[in-house]
Image (cartoon, rainbow, N blue to C red; front, side, top):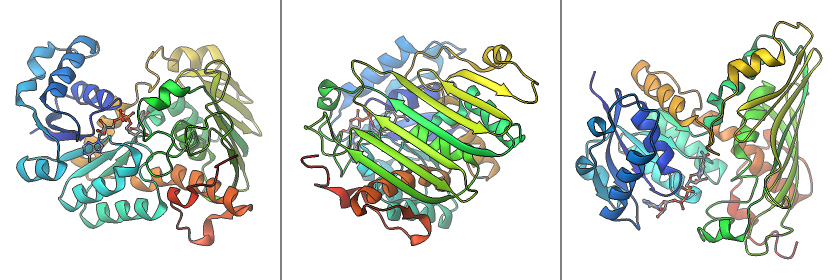
Length: 381
Ligand SMILES: NC(=O)c1ccc[n+]([C@@H]2O[C@H](COP(=O)([O-])OP(=O)(O)OC[C@H]3O[C@@H](n4cnc5c(N)ncnc54)[C@H](O)[C@@H]3O)[C@@H](O)[C@H]2O)c1
């Protein structure tokens, strides 16, 4: 079978994880072009070098599958699409550019893997989903932690009815991001290109929480503030309560203010017949697993599912790519489709609107929320 040809647009920090995922799936997929507005050939050499020295998991001689000299570099993605034969575009730019680039690429017949959050407005997310559908193309959003063994195990427990009635779940992301972190990119913490801790750091866990609750969103109440990061526009602390259609409640506490360093990232699910807590650096360890059926012990599930992945982004990009390749080959939706990616985005934008309007926001209101609606909202908070 011919390999799918892939291009990465935006070659900053997270692009490495994508290139590793391509290499791990080298039988099915290859990188043919890289694009970054501020980069030149030096970047490609750097990328090739970084991959060669860092990659441990590829079961072949890297020299046989990496040919940096065959990868063309561009600074304009539109020119790249004109000149290259590409099946998949991976969008790793600042979040505020995702939608515009994705829609352009979809209209040029490319499948899309887009980094989280998929867009900065509900309207843009809808437009991306619609354009993919109209062109019969696949669109996946990088919520890679859904592929963690721990998370897959938890979802199987939910699907298998192990919890009985699930009445609540909690996502806690208690992290520290200091000025040096925000200084790495002037887009960070802006309403136009990033949002605050909920939209950037907490979006994965919010995605997982809503995925486990097995129900659509009814309403969202949110309170946010910027307490310790006067040099960013958006929130550094947020608290959200979600009411789901099935009556269950989701609680979210997210912050980048914890002194003096990251404290906790956990996902807790509470049901009438079971309790589970997942934690670890990237939700890769089972901390509590206690069910009425007593079919599996904490020790068993830890042995089966815990991983020692030292990467804060986890190991999920590799299976996400596997799923995406299969989705293209089998003409089915990827696990984290555009519709799926839109759910966490909606929760967070609804929480921002809730703060602005001082009320709970109903999903049924027919929402048109854009992160830019909140410019200036937290000044002086
Ligand atoms: N899935 C995850 O766990 C995860 C982790 C980190 C970041 N992210 C997401 O990835 C995205 C990028 O984050 P990052 O930390 O890599 O940012 P970054 O600032 O390191 O990189 C972004 C790159 O995009 C480039 N760019 C901007 N506009 C472009 C354009 N029109 N064409 C080509 N290149 C363009 C910039 O020059 C920059 O090099 C963000 O949306 C972020 O939320 C996801």
